[in-house]
Length: 209
Image (cartoon, rainbow, N blue to C red; front, side, top):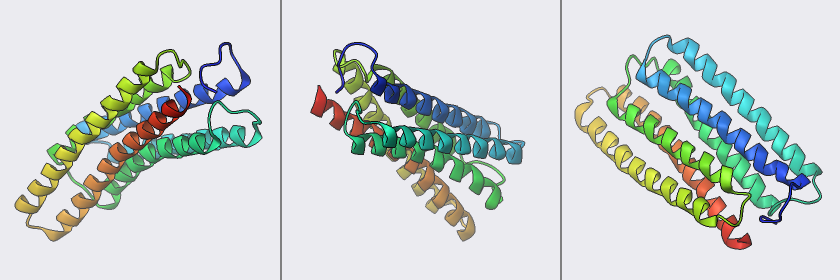
């Protein structure tokens, strides 16, 4: 259970979560670099794919550890769900990056920059959360970050809705509408995945604190 003193074998999951979120944070930074400097797109998209593959390896390692562990710090179902939802964040970012190339996107709409910023903020809050998760004596620190991720996701909802409104009102090319609707949905999906991770953690803390 969370909160047992001393370094235990099952504590490896906390370390692995931190490693996973740090890799996702790296992906988010590269995504921001891509949309803020929309040049050398193919090269940057390949870099995103490489990170996504590295994240898949981390997922495999966590699930292999889970499969081979007799004792876990909390429910196996929660560990599995957290691992998969963290992976969904980077999957969404890689999907957007890839679609920039597939769709032949020549420029990024301004709302993209704000959404990329919010995604980085949400992942940063998750990193703080995971850094404190093993210490049950500081549940308020974890819950503060859960609330922060929820706040960021709510802000993202507003940006997303405004982006769609502007898109449908200003864009006359239906192909461009289809492209950007999909891209905005995927970016919103990354924020939703961040919130899903935070919500699962909230449930874990409520069960074991």
